[in-house]
Amino acid sequence: MRFREPLLGGGAAMPGASLQRACRLLVAVCALHLGVTLVYYLAGRDLSRLPHLVGVPTPLQGGSHGAPAGRQPSGERGPRVAAPPPPPPPPSLGASEPRPGGESSPDADSRPGPASNWTSAPGSPSTAPSLPACPEESPLLVGPMLIEFNVPVDLTLLAKQNPEVKVGGRHAPKDCISSHKVAIIIPFRNRQEHLKYWLYYLHPILQRQQLDYGIYVINQAGDSMFNRAKLLNIGFREALKDYDYTCFVFSDVDLIPMDDRNAYRCFSQPRHISVAMDKFGFRLVFKGMSISRPNAVVGKCRMIRHSRDKKNEPNPQRFDRIAHTKETMLSDGLNSLTYKVLDIERNPLYTKITVDVGTPS
Image (tube, rainbow, N blue to C red; front, side):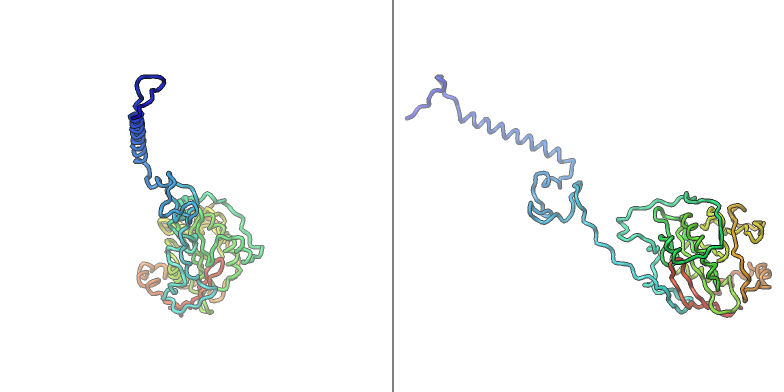
C-alpha cells in the first residue's frame, strides 16, 4: 500500500479531487450565468442574426467558400439583389397610323392606358420613390415675354431643345406630380408655319407651368367649309382615348400668350385665356361674361398676322345660334358628333389627327 506524500512538509494531505470538482462547478455556474445574460440580451433583437454573430452558415448563406446568400440579412450592409425588371411596354403608335372609324378607339395594344401616362420612369412602380405634388403656382415662371415671328422655326432643332417632351407632344414634370392633366386642342388646316411658332413658344411655357399635358392638332381634311367647333369636339373625344385628361384648352394656332403666368391649367369654371389681344389693342373685348379670366396684363396675347383662309368665312348664323344655345345644347355637339378619322401622326412635339368632318348640317 502506497501513502500520499506530505506537501511542503505538512502533516495533512491536500484534497486534490475535491478542489478539482469545486473548480468545475464554479466554471459551470459562470457559463450558465453568461448564457442567461446572452439570452436576455438577444430577446429584444433580431434572433435571426444569431447564426451570423457566431459564424454559423445558414441555409440561405454559403460557407466560407460557398455561394453568396440569396438575400441580404436584415441590417447587414452589402449589395442588394434587384427585382427582375417588368416586361417592356407595348410599342407606341408609329409616325403615321391610319385608323378608320372616328367613333372607335385605337387598338388597346397601340396606346398606353391612363396608368402609364407615357412618361412613367422605367422599373417597378413599387420601388420608384414617390414624388411630391407640384405647387399650385409654379416657381419656374418668368412673367412677361417678348414674342416675335421674324425668325424661322426648325421643328427638328426645336425637338432637341425640348428633350423632356415625349413623342406625340406629351410631357409631365419629372420632379413632382401635377394635379392638372391638360389636353390642348388646336383646330387646324393649312397653318404649318403658324404651328411652328405656336410649338416654339408654348412648349417651354407649358413646361414651366409644370403641367401634365398633351398637344393635339385636329386637322380638317378636304376643302369644305372649315368647321372649327366640330374639330374642337373631335379633339375632346380623341384626346380622352389617349389619357385621362381632366382639363381641356381650346387654342387657335395663331395666338401666343405674352406672359407665362397666364395659366393653361384647370379652373373651377370655364376660363377665357386670351383676354387682351394685340389685334384689338389689348382691350377686353368680351366684358360682362360670367367666366374666369386673368387680368388684362397677364392675359395679353399676340396674334400671327395672316389673311383669312378661303372656306373659313364668318358664319352669318353664328349670333343666332349662340342666342339659342340653351335650346340646342342637349341635342347638338358631342351628342350628335359624327366624323371619320383618316390618319393619326405621333410627331415629336404634337399629335396630328386628320379627320373627315362630313357635310355641315
